[in-house]
Length: 241
Image (cartoon, rainbow, N blue to C red):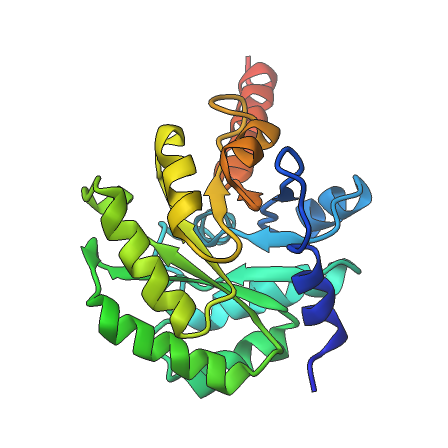
């Protein structure tokens, strides 16, 4: 049986108008999650790098237990669905990964296809994603991150090929992180299902513009946490004078 939270989150991706993508702010702790929920956003998507920074770790260095605990605090703090960026899955088998996500209260997850700066074999990664889908059933919305553009492979065809394999394995959405805005229409034409696109606060195309280029949903990675950090540092500098 599909949980209500997962179906509620999945439904938010359906029937989006081109200039109205699903905008998912990235909370890094319970307080930021409440701020975004109270502003009216219908769902949230945690950024692993933003959570890592809030816990005092470099990106990619957060112990799995601390990441799941942080996701749980965020999910408990709000009444809207929360998707969790759990990087490459922390070496967990699909069943354990799914169990820990559900225990934390997440209704979705980001799973990336590179490790230590190197792209994974797409067939092997697709097989692993299929295991996650089988373990989760309909209880998790799986967002498969495609890392070709951030790993120096600029050919849109490479991203489209990986995306096709991941969708066939059961991914609900694909996320070609770092894809230039100019190639988004090509990616949209070549990829089935929802397309996640990264936006950068205060620069580049707006979420509405990204929607017009093909984005179904827009996330910010650690951008909002870094924006908040910069604001705190400016206040601290003034106070220290």
